[in-house]
Length: 467
Image (tube, rainbow, N blue to C red; front, top):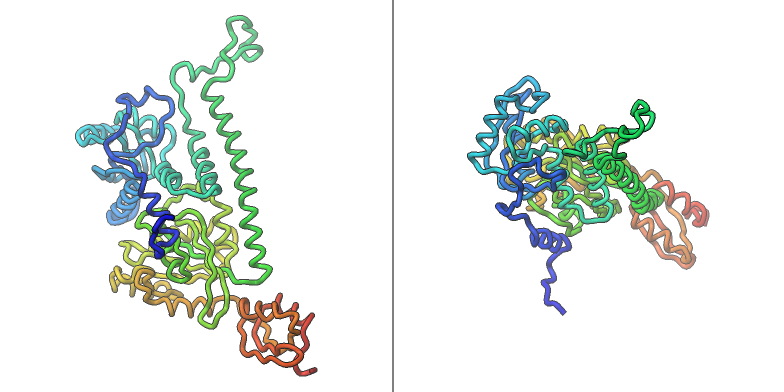
C-alpha cells in the first residue's frame, strides 16, 4: 500500500505525470546541414520568433507575438529573440523577404538558435526557401500548435484526432532529396521508348504519401467509431431531458478551473496553453436543485489550424448540442476582446453553435484591471465577472445559468403509486419538486417537470383532483 495524500484530485496526478517528463533545452543532436535528412522530428529548443505585421496597430502585432512566445514555451522551447516585420502582405517566397531573411540568418547565428518559428501558416515553398537561407529548422504556428496537442493528448480519441491533424498538415509538406525525387516512367507514358526508358516505379515520396493517406482513412474510421460512445451518452441525456451546458473559450482562460469550482470535478489545471484537450462532462445542480450537465471543451486560439477544427469535430459537437454556452474569457489578458472574437469565429464553423444562448464569463477577476472589467461588461451585456480561483461571482453565475436553462413547462399534482417511486426520483433529478405528501395509496407529487417526464407521469399516475 502506498501512503498517498487523500486530498489530491485526479488532475493533480495528471499534472504531476505531465511534469515528470519534460524537454530539456540544449540537448539537441540536430545536424548542421538541414538538407542531410529527409524527414525531421519536430524538436523545439532554442528558438527565434518571427512575425509579419500586415494590419492593425503595433500593440496587436506585439500581442500576437507574445501569444506565440507562450505557445513556444508551452511546447518546451527557450525563446531567445522576437522579431516583427511591417509588410503589406507576407512575401510569397520567404515569408519575410530575401533581405530580412539574410538579417534573420545573422541573428540566428549570433544567438545560437536552432529553430525559427513563424507567426502564421507558411506554404511548403516558403518553409523550404526560408530554411535554405537561415540554415536552421523553420516551423510555422500551425506545426507548433499541433506539437502541443500531440504532447497533451492522453485519451485514445484525443491521440487519434491529433495524429489525423498532423498527417493532414504533413501531407503537402513531404520532401525528398536526390533519387527520391525521380519521376521517370516507362511503357506508353515514356513515348514507347521501351528498354532503358522505364523508371524506377513508385518513388519513396509517392510511397510515403500513399501510406499517409491510408493511415488518415484508418484514423477517420477509428474516430467515427470512438465518437459513438459519446453520442450514445449525449442521446441518453437528451432522452432524459437533462439540460446540457458547455464551457468554451480561449485557451488558458480558466475553463477547467471553472468546471472544478462548479462541480468539484478535479480535472487537470495548469497555467499553460491547451493544457486540457479531452472533454470532461460532470453533473451539477442549480440553486433550486435542478440537475444539468457541464462539459469542459478544448480551448481555442487565434488562427486555430483548420486541420484541428476538422479532426476535433466530434469533440466540438459538445458545444453544438448544448442548451447553453458559458463563453469563458480571461479578464486579465491585455486584449480580451480579440479572444472573444477568435472563439466566435470557431463557433461559426460548428453547426448550430451560433444560435445557442451564451453567457460571457469574465474570469480571473482577482488579477484583472477594474477598467478592463468595466469595459467588457459594458460591451457584453449578458456577462458575469467571476474568479474561479477565489470563488467570487459563482452565485451570480449559477443564478444566470438557472435563468437560461430550458423552462420546466409542466406543473403537475399527481398521485404516484409506490411501485413507481423511480418517477419521484426523476422529478427530483430532472425537475423542481414543490411538495411531497405520502398517503396510503401513494405519493402526492407537486412539481414542475419537462415534457418527457410529464408524459410518463400522465400514463401511470392519477391527477389528485380525481382521487
